Image (cartoon, rainbow, N blue to C red; front, side, top):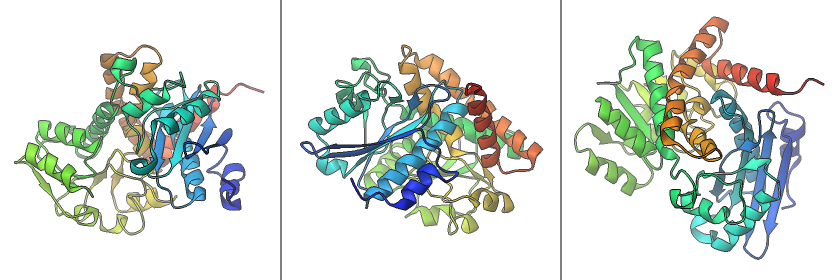
Length: 362
């Protein structure tokens, strides 16, 4: 990888979005591996974050995504109360075409070469079975199967945490945490989204779903013949009449200059990372009276789970920690109101304060 533009270097060294401690470019020609490992901060402890396997259009796009995701993990881990900094890795390529045991083992060796500064886990395009392979070369691997000493699928607690964030949003906005009879739109019903639908239906919410994969939609509709309906795409979902809560649960950038003006929901609370397409979108939401539950706060259930693997996994302990996302979200809304700023900015301030206090005094 030689075509890393000055734009990426500017992000890394000179912009407010940078400040990363270390970025490693990895290549193994024999397996076809091309990867980027970005460590944003180790102020609170070893950097923890997943491995995204995705067919980026350019290497520059892959590096930029790794930088952005790693920074987000620093804030997520800080707000989750974990003793971990933020890191992220991306593997460049279509996992359906190039993923192999040889490639995953090569990737594991690169992660291991960092000596524990970065702890990896699953993300888009990687699964528990993949982490089992990576772990054969790297002890700093989480998200493994129970048979291999791990906790299994982290999407279960990710969805639970988002559900708690929704309950907190309802409490703040309507004075009652119950979601019964609320209309919730879920964009993306894959790993996390389908678990979220289960929580919502169990409480009696009306759910509207969409997904680019017809089989994912069909699975939900077959399981819930009543109380769940589907629309053609995200554009239709965000315009759904009477929508109370919108939950983006696919890729990032869901909240942008095109979507925010047409949102019908009063609350946005979803599992997707990096939902705000650019700085300023949080103010646009606030100006429209839309309550935004910061994504990296409410979707932290998964990272709470994988972090616990390093200490001997206990599901009940993790679920109890993920349940605290309700209180954390309420605290962010209170801070936002007190400071006169959007919730996203309030969450950033709290996370930055924790990271700053953890750094040793020079």
